[in-house]
Image 1 (cartoon, one colour):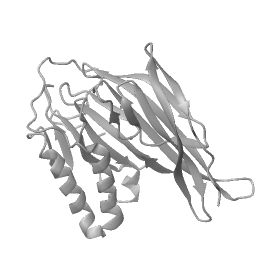
Image 2 (cartoon, one colour; image 1 turned 120 degrees about the horizontal axis):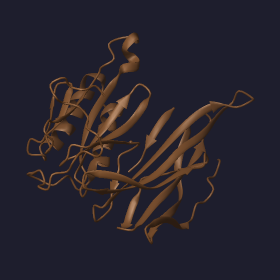
Image 3 (cartoon, rainbow, N blue to C red; image 1 turned 30 degrees about the vertical axis):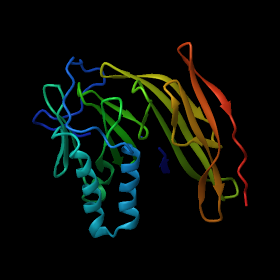
Length: 269
């Protein structure tokens, strides 16, 4: 299965490790010398993906580490890497650390894990870390104040007031039909979380049908979210995703509902 995300663990013996989502909050916020990049974690992820697509094997890692270091520089030492270990200092008693596990052979391939630091969201105080594993990819979020850790399917997009994040993931899954021809289906979902006091609370989840998936969400306001409709455009040797419209979701009386839809069918030629 190829995972397409659009604007997604070993414990360290010396006290580093992932902490529960509901770790107790501390009133004072952890200091930071500079705000996160305005273009956000999604832009950093795209740049890292380009490192692997456009660089040769000898320079790919150097390219990714340079981007990661550019984001470390914005945390005043609160986020750092020591070889395979990525650590975050928060108000929790111990730092939160994530450790890469390289694949050293066929026997260890299923244990492969690699983390890439993408930056901090410009609203919710959440560090964003992309996670690559044998079975697929995802995103680890770390609360900059409490050290609470949560897992989502793709890089989130924060609302203008910082009170919520939206996560859209689309999986393009090739399979064989009865005539042994390759067909493509989508397994996709859109999730909205409310953020506060070091916790993420799921407010809304929509699992899209297999003929379309959500693209990178765009907040129109703190209570209005626009999502591109991505549909499959099949070619003779591969499949592509194309935006064919948008769907808009709004928060009304404490509940999310679809406000409008303008999806159009995808041409097949």
